[in-house]
Image (cartoon, rainbow, N blue to C red; front, side):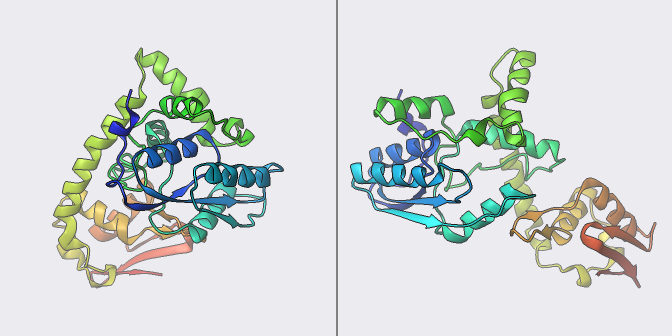
Length: 291
C-alpha cells in the first residue's frame, strides 16, 4: 500500500511546518512528509502537564536529529482545571506557526463528526477537515499510519490520557465507534468521511449563495426584509451574527434553541429574547440590537 497516494501534500520541495507530539500519528506525518520530498521544520509543544512530557520533547528532538530535520520546542504552561482541552488548544495555536500541518487521520475526522453531531452541530460541524490543507492525512486510516511508523523502526511515545474515559473523544473512539460498527455491520469511519465530503460540497455551495449576506450587519438589517428570506438563509445568517468567541479563541455558533428564539424576534412573535453569555437580542422599529 502506497500511503503517499492518499496524502494531500503540496509539491516536493515545498517548505512546511509540522506539529509533532511524538505519538504515532504525528510521527507518521513526519515520515510521510519526508518521503514526499518536503522541506520540513518540526514543532513540538511541551505543556508540562504530564510527568513524561519533557521526555516526549527529548524524543522528538532525537527523531529530528536522526532525519536531519530542524526542530523547535515550544514550552507552554496550561494550568489544570476545567476546560483544559480548549485552553491547551489555545496555547498551541498561540505558539505554532500559521498553517502548521497536523497528523489528523480519517479516523479523527469521523470522531469529530460524531462529537459535533452530539453537540447538535449544523452542516459546518458535520463536514470538518474536508479541504483543510493543514490535515494532509485526512484520507488515510490511523492503523495504516501506525504501521508505517513501525516499519520505520520507530517506537512512538505513549500518551496515557488517550485511554482516559474522562475525555469525550476517547469515549467516542473506544466505546461508541465499536458499537456503531457492530450495528451497521461494517466499518463506519469511511462512511462518515464520505458523508463529511458530501456535506462539504453542499456547504461550499451554500457559502457561495450566501456570499451577498456576509456584509449585512445585524444592526443594518430590516426585519421586514429578513422575514421574506427562506428559513435556511435566515438561519445561516443568524448563526454567523450570533456566534460567540470563547476566551480561548474558539468560535461557537448559537444553539438550535437560541436560533428558534432569535427567529421569533425577527418574525415579530417576540420583542426580545435571551441568549448565551448574558446577551439579549431585541427588535425595535424593525431593527435588531444585541446587548
